Image (cartoon, rainbow, N blue to C red; front, side):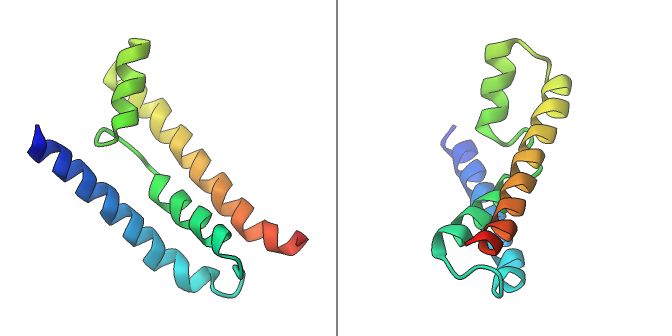
Length: 96
């Protein structure tokens, strides 16, 4: 169990770091406030979540949904959350 938790933590760290590497240069001119950069990084780490996410299994087991259906709904939902966060980070500086 410890090895599995370690791998899940590693994958989470990799997605977060990847999001920072990709988002950093493109948001440099738009984001002057640190809190918006944190939201952008979190949004990037959330996108396309699937079976290695603990939230996936919580939703699947508590709601009694099959893995196939949970994968369809969970991945779409986390992608929409991520894109909404990305859009809010890009649009917020225009109104401040």
